[in-house]
Image (tube, rainbow, N blue to C red; front, side, top):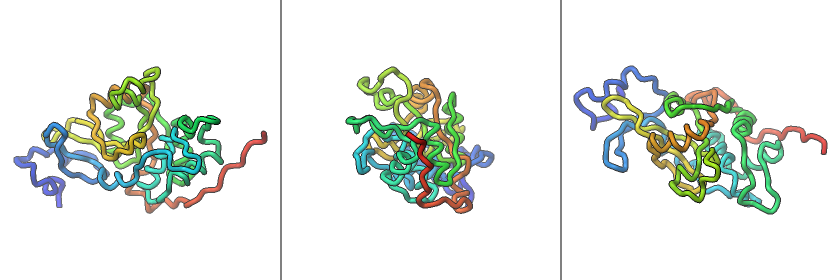
Length: 245
């Protein structure tokens, strides 16, 4: 079945751009919150199951959005890990930061540390910066696992979380929405562990402000989801030796 045949609500060759697009993810049709039809690229519904409200770990560290996002991506690659599994590993390997007496601020990770965590579990990844919305969308469309750094205040339209205006939160990007007629980028679908919302739509305008203008920080796997079975990954990688105190 062709991509056009998989989208029966589009007629008259309006989705002709699909025949030349490089796509490594499932394709479906949907409507945006304002009712406009779009083509969705990505396993948005399937990956929604891998998200949850952060803080589900033995010490109830609530600042671990990066950890939950890593667990989300690792689940996408078939590892089936919990937040507690990943934060335990990250703490042993000194890839997560703890703030004594402040669980709400503990468990945070840098993009480079998120990439290392994914690599530890056999999913090679790299941290990037200065990425555009189109580059972020292409990574998702081609089938890579993607974590994006955003400013929470901008993303949630809540000035209480703006801080210094830079990236202070991460979300897992699970899909993109494109115009059915010309393929123009309309927006993104994200799993947000801060509020536990999955498959949440974010317009390209909002993502540009929250992601691009705050540094364009992201973590992208170096293998695609279609390669998951070809890349064995240990269920519980050994912790790295700890440096002497």
